[in-house]
Image (cartoon, rainbow, N blue to C red; front, side, top):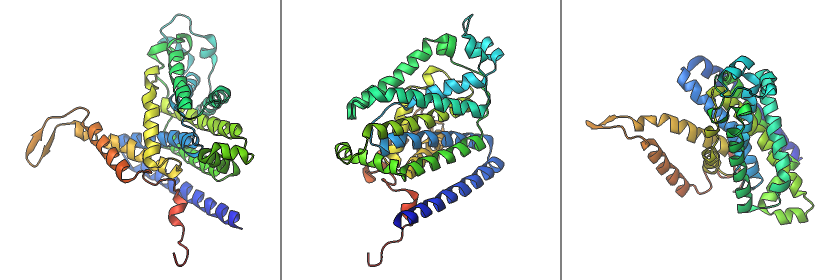
Length: 346
């Protein structure tokens, strides 16, 4: 009875999320200017990345630092598939690019799906050596993966065009694509969390040895979380490539992983709702604070623009938030937890 009630409540929440998101997407597309729409597109893509990263890092409790690697894979796979052969041949800085790179073409939807699948397959192959270690050692191993992908991108110009990257990528990413996939990602991750696999992931996070003693196949659970996270990170990378219309290895540094780590910790490690709020706070906040870098007039006092001032102010805000909200903006709570009625007498 309790499980049926939880399932029903989750379905209602899912429906509310879908209706609200569809309405907001339509409203934004028909109301906001191009600059604001681009910010929302960027926020939606980072929601995909943050929510999926939170699955392995926050829900399963594996301190993994790999997102930049999988985002890069997704971005390059998508770019190769949607840029036409003539454009690729023209911009490649070598005489003989790989024939299969020029021959492979796909529609945007199929390119995104393929990007996610390739990322998931790479994650699956990495799972065997990666999950032989835990904690800080796991972080170091996965951190190295991101550097390896960047080096491979630089040193294989016949595929990736090396350090010059790929330009003139068709801009298919719009609010309907980014918003739709963000909704799907959030709902998919939430349904995983509330399934038996999600409960097993939390058991691994809380005490891996105890979970093993209770019969949980911890390697299988960690691999499932890792590959699922990688799939959506690959899709997010493809959307990012199409939004930016130009990618290079320098775009996928550890800073991208660090940015996502800040987002999920700020929102509340282990909370999908927190990952969404953290993304909005960080990505939209940084963008709208650009005025701090420009000359200003305050109470008759003229000040010159100070490059980087917004980062200083934003860092101070982050410090204050973490001082007064040690578990992030929402802790481990989800949206449904805020609507629970308190029991009588409590």
